[in-house]
Image (cartoon, rainbow, N blue to C red):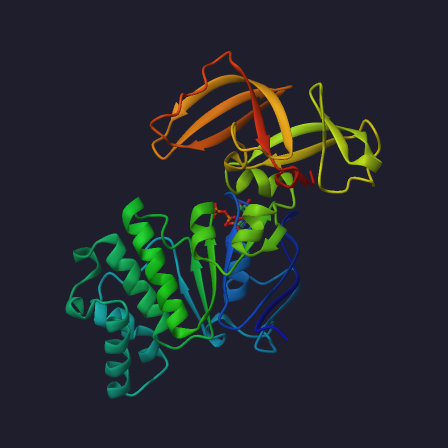
Length: 351
Ligand code: ATP
C-alpha cells in the first residue's frame, strides 16, 4: 500500500462541490505537486490531509492508518503556508522550537534539534533574529525548519514561494527539493506555477475544477498531456482544431490540408472534430520531418535564445521556435512557409 492514499475524496461547502472523486496514491519519500488554476481545489485537498477540513466523503490514509478520527495535531504533519506565518513575537530559535515545546520534549533535545534544523536551512547565525528583521526568503526557510523540527511523517507546502520575487523563488525551490531529498520526507506541494511544478516534482497532479485531470511525471505531463486543459495549462503548446477525414487511415484535415496522424483515431467518425497539440519546439522549416503543413507567417519575434514565428494554418494560429543563429533570416509576415515535424509530435488530446 502507498504511504499517503487519498481515496475518492470529496468536499462540498454548502451546495458547492469543490473537490470531486479525487484519487491519489503517494509513495514514501515522493515529492508530488498539485498544479492548477486559482479556485480548482488544491488548497482544500491539502487542508483535508492536514485535518483542517473534514472531507464530505472518501478517506485519507497515512502509513496504513485512516486519518478520519484524528485531529490535525494528532496527524504528525508539517505545513508551510504562503504567508510566512511565523510567530512575530518569537525569535528564530523559538519559532523553530515551538512544535517541540508543545510536544513536551526535554530542553536539551529541543536545543539539539533546533540547531540541526537551523544548520539544514543555513541560518544558524540568525537564531536570535525576529521575523520582522529578516527577508521573505529567510522567513520561509525558518517556516520550513519549524515544520520539519518535530519530524513529521508528511510535509505539506501551500504555495510557499508565491510571495517571493523571481530570483529567490528559484533558489528556494531548489533548496526545498534538496532538503526534501536529504530527509526523504513525503511531500505535497501546491502551486499554480507550471514551471515550478515541472522543475521540483517527482509527479504532478493537474487539477481542474476539483478533479485530477492527469497524474504523471513532469515529462509525461509536458510531453503527453491527456486533456485540452492540461495541454493549455502546462507549457506553451499550440492547440489545433482538426476534422477527422478517414478514421481507419488516421487522417485528419487542418483547414484544407490532409495529414496522417501517428495515433489511432479509429474510434472517431469522419467529420468529427478533434483537438491536437503541438509543441513550438517540435516544428522546423529546415529539418525534414515526415509531416508538413503550409502556413502564412503572421509574425516573427526575436526572443534571444529562440525566434518564435506565428503561422496561420486554416483557422489556427500555430507558433514554432527556431534556435537563434546569426545567419538565420526571420520569416517575414505574409510569407507562406512549410512547417515540418514528425507525425508523432502531433498529440490527440481529450476535451
Ligand atoms: P488558490 O490557488 O486561489 O488558493 P485553490 O485551487 O487552492 O485556489 P481552494 O482554496 O481549494 O482553491 O478553493 C476551492 C473552491 O472552494 C473555491 O471556489 C473557494 O472559493 C471555495 N472554498 C474554499 N474554502 C471555502 C470555505 N471555507 N467556504 C466556502 N467556500 C470555500
